[in-house]
Image 1 (cartoon, rainbow, N blue to C red):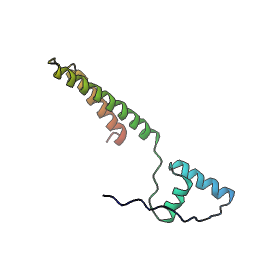
Image 2 (cartoon, rainbow, N blue to C red):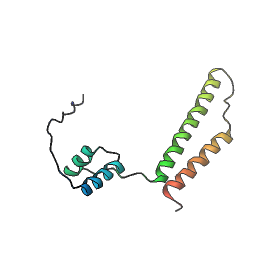
Image 3 (cartoon, helix red, strand yellow):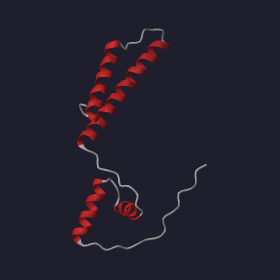
Image 4 (tube, helix red, strand yellow):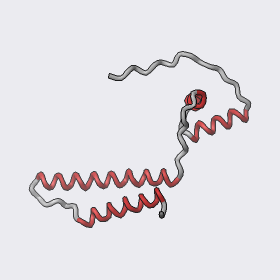
Length: 112
């Protein structure tokens, strides 16, 4: 059984110049963190998440679409088998899936 998360009850006031506040706010936005979480992590020397690049975001979106397609193909195949039919998924379907995965891999690691 996991321990309950301790409640944060202590507040610390901090002052920034306008420029400092703008810089800290931008870091928080870029890291997808609240201002409080950004300051807490910085103060406690925890690593900050790195902003995602355009290629990482696009790759994630393509992987999500691919995962959806794989689920649809698997469901169609399982339904057909349960009904005593041949699976509607062909070798060509799986070759397309493989090629998409291969292309995404090249986008992630580059042409090495």
